[in-house]
Image (cartoon, rainbow, N blue to C red):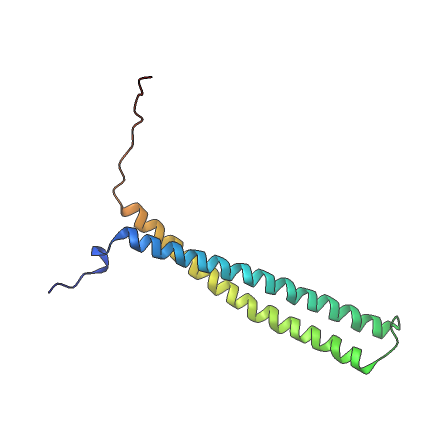
Length: 119
């Protein structure tokens, strides 16, 4: 009974596993970009409504003021939590890509020479 170490593992399956992980992390980063855009939109919209209320461009309404403040605070919270998630996903992505590249470098690749065809 011999235990297989990480070095004895099939590099092709490990590379395929890392490729799947890289793809998942790329999708997660894409979601983070969308949430970041939504957070910015909340900040801008909430700020614009609050500014319009303060300048009198919109008739003062307690509900509109509360909604604008909630949008600003929600945008700040969403942007902050999303940015930390995006940084973490980017770090995991870089780590997975480095590990994949190291595995690819360990594989003994053979040079393929072009064949001459006789037509």
